[in-house]
Length: 90
Image (cartoon, rainbow, N blue to C red; front, side, top):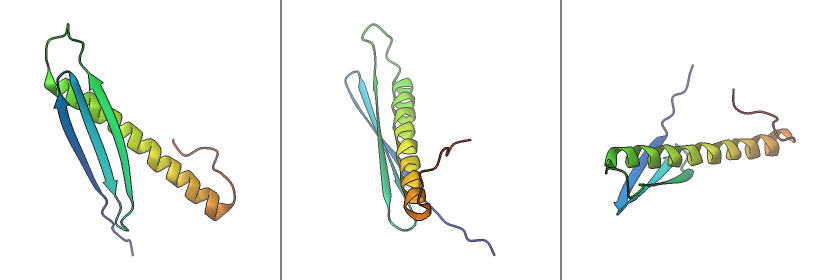
């Protein structure tokens, strides 16, 4: 029988002037949390387009979050299997 788990992800976005900051938080069903942050800066010569800053900052936050989760997986594998995995993606 398969087991279903739910992990929650939340992204918060804040803008201040030409800088947009996103924070992505992943919470596992057993209470562990992972956090990624991303920034986007608008060139003052560019036309304001808040959605672009939101998307870029979010993408960067999620990318950092992904790397942190992969590092945790590598550590867990190393601790349980005795060796660091050669490859985790793909």
